[in-house]
Image (cartoon, rainbow, N blue to C red; front, side):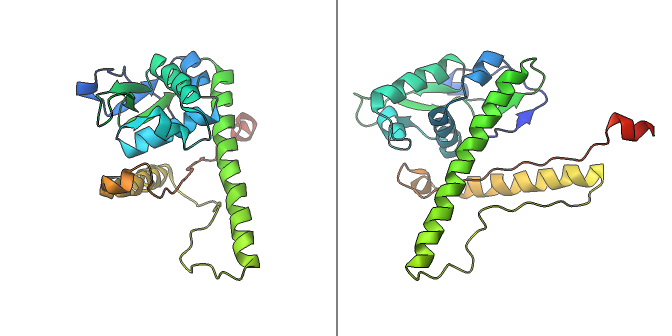
Amino acid sequence: MTRNTIEEQGGAASRDEAEIPQVVSITDPQAIRALAHDARLIVLDELFASQTTRTATELASLCALTPSAMSYHLRALEKYGYVIRAASEGDARERRWRAAGERLELNTQIDSANAKTAYLNVQLNAFRTRLNAEVQRREAEAKTGIAPDPDRPPMLTSGLVFLSEAKQREFNRRMLDLVYEYEAQATAEERSIDSRRMFYLISLLPEYQSMGEASS
């Protein structure tokens, strides 16, 4: 899972492929700023979600780049500890890459608000692009008379629920556990470069009283 929610704390990540850590925790503002590029987010989503290796050519096909341009982005991600070089498989003429861990967490204790804002803006813009493409696809289907699947997922669902602090923690845990459950069920074939993907964006925002309201 590319857990691109920003976390509170994290430890140092190992770069040894033989000991892939469960969590890669990024605290360097420059490393977070390095994610402010659509192609790099696509790469991280792909490698952390698939937990398998990809070549620069395969990854380039996901974001309309040349293999050489993708190699440049992969080396930048390697520099900051997001990805590592993997052992050669099959055609040894092209290097393979993998995620540096099972999950990715970005630490909120860094001082650079600009780095975090830049990252969040790219993440939101990338999802907005996917939403707009889905709107257009569904409109095209409707014009040609294609009936929607009754179980088709919603493009976007938002709202609020009334939860105590304890229930908020449980809500967060159960939602993430559901994602982890389906990730674990994916077979090697289902994680291939040609497999079908479903993108999601989860944001759980508790309501907080302002200082003025709390003191009145």
